[in-house]
Amino acid sequence: LTANEVKNSAGVTPKARRVGQGSSSGMHLLPETFELPLYGSRGLLPDRHVQLFRELQAKWQCYDAYCRVSMGLGVNQMLQVLSYWAICHTVVENNTPTTGFALVAMFQCSTVAVAALDLSGLRVREIVAVQAVGIVPCVLTVISVAHGSRNSQGVLDPDEAYLTS
Image 1 (cartoon, rainbow, N blue to C red):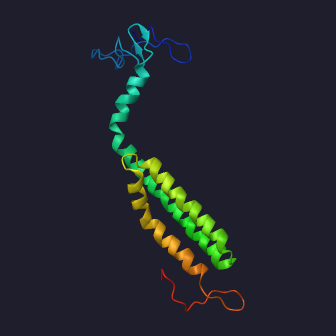
Image 2: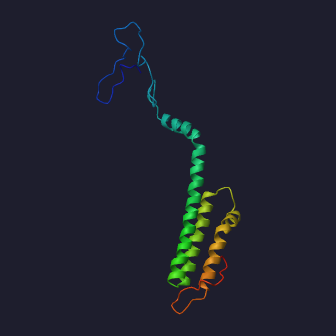
Image 3: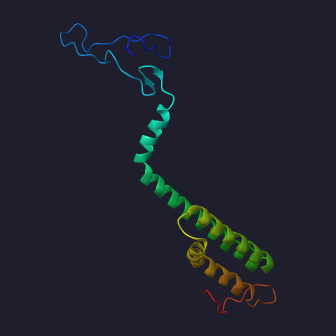
């Protein structure tokens, strides 16, 4: 394509401009012939955008991997926070241990499911072994708080020795 064949968005055909018009330098700001990124000599190339995406994606793979790891860890930590919030709200404040056990089981199963989706290179038993580091303290906490002694108003005894304290 030549510069005279390309029309801008207003429909005006741009002309090649010279630096310092009227001077003898003769340098062009725009070349006489050039190609637009998605156009070839025969017009629009249908797969050119895919090719450009793949070229750019290769440069961003390390950033993409970092984001995936960060998002996986963030979701895991959010589910752990929700588990401990469920323990505090259901078992400690409302004295409903069955609901607390159910919520903790649901959130901990969700952490295993998210890890299984994110960690494609590991087998399920390896993922469960890694997730056990976060699951065991949470389960011990819900068990020890649910079986803790309470006073006449239903408040947990602060002097009791809990498993995870």
